[in-house]
Length: 572
Image 1: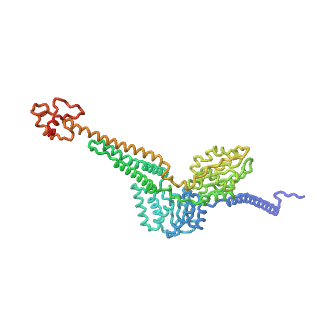
Image 2: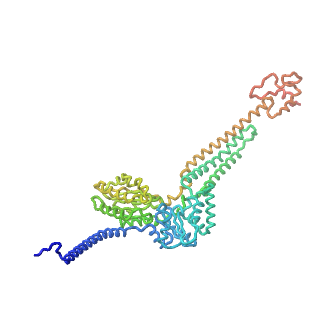
Image 3: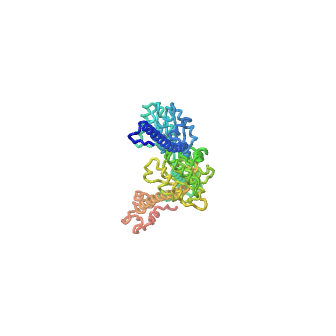
């Protein structure tokens, strides 16, 4: 065997060895690249699977619905704007003269100036885009058409009261938006000027407290005025008899009875008139402009959410801003699955939907969770309700081996309301807080038997909630009592005033007659002329004096014996 030193190796040897090393290097790089591609492909497939379960973006979802119908009314405001009002909005939208796309959505649902622009971009159609909530027109924008949108929106806000309702507000918006830019701006400026001067449109509806005041006033009038009429006639008659100028009259039996009968008749007629006219004067029957929703309006959202929960344990409202990204949703689904397989665990249903006082549950999260469970066939599990607008999170147990009261009342505040960071974040850090909630459920003690958080109270019916109390109810009954007392006090005060005037006039007349020693009804001049031939009292004279030498006792009439003796008729 011949061995070559390094210096003695031929060039062919070096060429063959280099080729082998090159091939091995390329094979290693190929294997490494294949491994990296495999590792990247698996997460990509997982992300693709998660993306398949993602709800559509808010703007895309709304644009898809506007493509089918230019007027979209949410199902989350049945107590204020039921979906059955869509034809009324569509009829007004046709009056604009340009293609109009109307979105009726809950307030504070991520509405900003970019929402209408994003919807227009995805819809790809020019026209007038209007965003309306439970108070009226919130935003309006014109794309490819000329319309005084901002002036029309301001005019509707300034000219109408706050309780005019969204339909009336949109009607005023349409009335102004069809005008030219100059007229619309002038009208908006005039309305703004009146508002700056202190003018405020009068409210169109009243509340329960106003109706109670109306009932109280009606009760006071119904007893106070008739009783005053009945008692006023004898009061005036009594004052007339006490008057010193009253002339003695013969006793009459028919006139007082007639007066009393007339007073009673007038009082009864007044009471009937008040009873009949009060409902015409206070004719309000509703608290707001909201129409009565249909049964379908009241169940539309719960049915939509339950249908989504039947496919996926997490339902995110597509009408609201998206607060959970793909990674957070994927992790939450994974944790829900692990909790369901754990000992004492079970299904967990998460709903990310707003809760407002105008919805079917009147803003009650527990009532909404119970309704969703009933729509799912009363499936047992933990029902989590997360509000994307306020960020509040609640959990309710139905049928799992968990301490329901602990879950209902002792849930940490960092989960239910969040901390300062959550308050400042647009998404309220719902992803982190829902993950913390799953950790809390994993560590929660198990019970021997399934428990439940109970059954919530039913929400008030829309009709009862929007109706005013009857006029002859509530404070009407206290008003009856107050009216009777006021009538007695008024008549008593009037009697005191008239009686005081009578007593003040009597001494003056008595003094003029008694102090002169003359019988009442005889004038001072006549008395002096009549007794002049007989001399004055206390003065010597030829004739007899007028009871001279004796002082008149107080309260007694003077003696006129000399007058009677000298002027008595002579007998024949």
